[in-house]
Image (tube, rainbow, N blue to C red):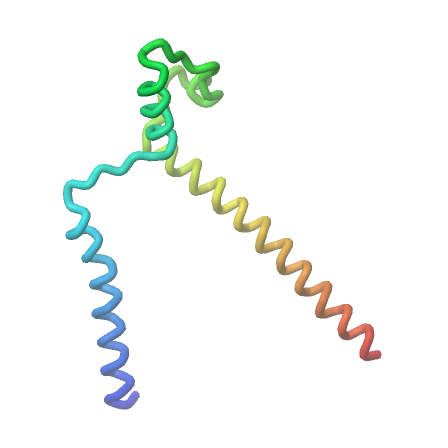
Length: 107
C-alpha cells in the first residue's frame, strides 16, 4: 500500500468517525417522537379531551398492555427488512428475466 492510499484511508476513517459523533453532539437534549405521537397530539388539540380511540392494537390486547419502545422498534425493523427483501427479490427476478430474454434473442 502506498503512502497516498494510507492517507486516503485515514482521512475516510476520520470522516466516518465524525459522521457518527457529530449527530450525538448536535442533538443533545433533543426529543424524538413518532408520527403516531404527533397525530394523537393534533387530534387532542382539535377535539379536546373527548377523543377515544376506535380500537386498541392487537399486540397490546394479547400482552395486556403497551409494548415497550424497544419491541416496537424491533417489529418496525422486521417489517422494513421483510419489505426490502421482497422488493429486492422482485427486482432481481425482473433483472434476470430481462437478462435471459436478451440471451434468447441472441441465439
